[in-house]
Length: 401
Image (cartoon, rainbow, N blue to C red; front, side, top):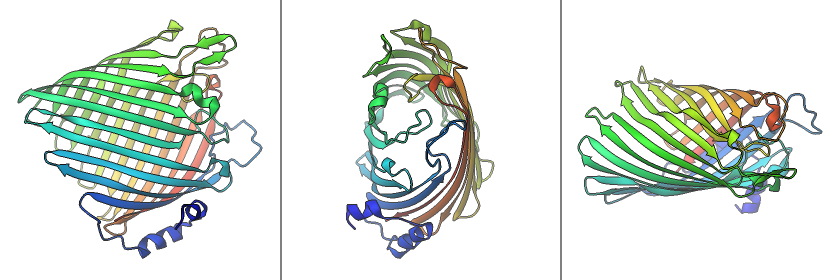
């Protein structure tokens, strides 16, 4: 099938299943390369996340179809291990067809070892996809490109102790000229020391420095804003195997965020994330997270927020072939305020979301899934958003060869 035909192909949920079952999906090409294809359908009753009180000369709801193909790679090289994937996805919309796009994702990671004491990772990532509409509601296509490079290493100088360090660079660019103010590079460097318990648990301390640089400063009249920042952190880094059914992960401590321009935006205090995994039975598991973190905001008025939130996800393996999932998330975002720039209303918003889903492993190589979601936000005038509600469903079929 030509790429032109793929761009125009329309899939129904039944056609997706028929197409996948009609192919020979049981044969694996090799132990290293695993091709896969996926077809999906999504309905969203508020695709652009438009506020409830905003009039829109058009249709708020839309349907999207996705056709995806890619490969998974897993290759041992002596004591090293190379893993990665590459995939392309064609996404088409029924109504807002100006948003149609081709997503690209490529990732690779080399887990390396030297002798019995040195180990680490080296890799990178490239993704190109549609920017979420949560903080910028326009019916124009706005692709976001992320480029990532990372390297880390650990030296186990004692059976119970190790020191380690790492470096990560993320670069983000946006297709729309109006969103180019969010083009940025984030560099993260860290060093730490860990105590390794015989039980498999780990307790450590890590010092981190994050530097953010924006390529295109924002302008408010005659004011040019330099949004570059540095963030210094000192945190506990814990992976605690509390029991055979409970695991606690902590990366939390103190962070200080400073800006070179408008120092009134500077902030400091508790910062981090705590995660708990509990599997009371072989079929049932729960994942809970709580966080207080700084995060980027993809908006033209503000660039960052302090987020406080929590989430809970439950997974139930009903049978060897059927799995049910449910999740809920709550988050409050407090946006940075700008000196000499007047905003109306509170500088914060509140987001809530819930999802339920079913996954059916029809065969060893074919998987069908369905999910439904509900999102809700109490908005903030500071970033030009308002209260909204959004509901939707998604169907997906995947075959791995």
